[in-house]
Image (tube, rainbow, N blue to C red; front, side, top):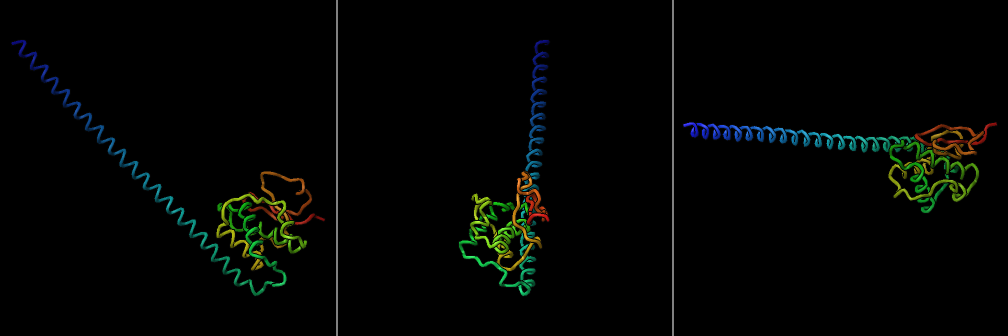
Length: 202
């Protein structure tokens, strides 16, 4: 009798253990499923945020381009065509490469690219420098093909007479350095990490 009772007790405990294991596995499976769903929702949310950011960035670039095109059209009749520096296709490509190298970072506003183009323009126009002389101190490293923003900046400065700084602007440097030649120069201002200069102060 006792042996039968002990056997039934062992069987009952075994059933309880299996039941508990089943419940535990079910709970773990439910929690894992919930975690996977939450992770997928988070990833989907981040992808949506990235898509929105990219769309906003493209919209902003298109807006800037439209505004600059509008300003260029409005101001074109006021520009003295004799003051513009004409460019060959090869010269334009070289200037675009310089601007891309110095200010191609799209986190910078387009004014930074226009200001770099203006320094080249002003040296050629005001000093009579050749293009090679005007760009001899600038970086010519390959930063990839010039972007539409770079091409637009060069177009606005060289073709339409647009300017970022009213006074002659002849040099610039990255804010991470302070070159010897900056002493005594007229500071035109900074755009992003670039600081621009005119001639020497009187």
